[in-house]
Length: 281
Image (cartoon, rainbow, N blue to C red):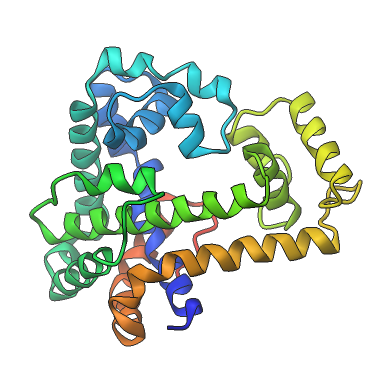
């Protein structure tokens, strides 16, 4: 199977999962159970599938956030709400979001078919070496198609993400290294990743100097030839590690899933995540 088909489908489906981090409804549900602020809601809701884990486990599996940011909210979150309560709030929040934004689409034949195809794709994923995926894979499947599709995309996303981290670790890259390399591609404005992951200027500058010394970045923060080559290896390896899920479907049904979900993903991207670089085409 051509890895580019799987990669394009992943990008198109990403807003269907990723909107849970930007929409107001999940944040309202987290606040209802006592979680304080967007950061606590984010870290607790994404980690809750693994149980009441330590900050160190979240740092290891999420990778690129300043560890002190994580420690400010984990494990405090578990003293406020249990993982089961957090997961219930997350599902209620995304259900409200999808119903509000997608309207009649969630009851359509397209939504039913997309949910079935995405669930079939998850049968190709496997547990070994995929901690965030494994936690979510142990959760019960929702009943309604629009939530089945969301849960399936969550599994596919976390499986791919675990593989991406493995590829980066093979290159000896830390979380801040990954952010600096991403920024060097020019895909996002300078400073966005540093701010969103809460790295201070001293840490950011030290990380850049380290990558310059390793021959990955030039002194102006752009990628060297080696840096470009190493980054492409990580991207290609990530694609290859994610392929088992999509090979279950094959290219034609993977393309079909992409076509089915594209209208919903565009609505979610356009209405809820302005300023986020969703690539749904």
